[in-house]
Length: 222
Ligand SMILES: *Cc1c(COP(=O)(O)O)cnc(C)c1O
Image: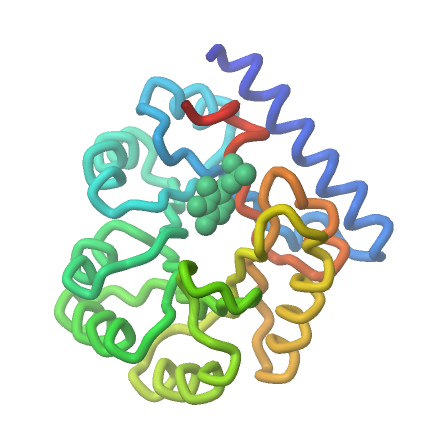
């Protein structure tokens, strides 16, 4: 993909965000666009960096470790986010590489991340992932466990920025976004990581501060 095409896709997605923000009476600059580059090689990512995009997300630590150190060396302003499930034994690698971790969802991971950030002198921003549709196969803490997990994360010294959610597939997502936003409000959290290519406008209207966009930028994954 050429830089021109990357720029066009970024402009398109930003226009969607701006339109939804306007409807909701929000300022578009308060919404961070995370370009989800999972499965795409470095050659597909560099046109987006050249087009000015600095915020990217990956869902696997190992894949990110292969692709990103060289890209970050070339462009130190890169702000890299982890949006996929994190195994506790990868916590140190994650803390070293990512500025923000969106998938904190259990006490054992809180403990591992707290230890890793102590050891490496880095403190990534964290989102607590909630299993908003109560789906057994999905990551995220159960709604009932959120208050306790949030308390543990704060007590352990994690920099908790907000909540992250992935609503069930194939149904209207707005009610799940609204519920996530309510939970964040109830717990005094400002960050809301929600909205993907298919439902970004609804997410922005309902308060998303971070939208995670893959397909609409990079194309369908193989
Ligand atoms: C892949 C992924 C996205 C991006 O999804 P698209 O539909 O391609 O925009 C967002 N969030 C998470 C957690 C993902 O794994």
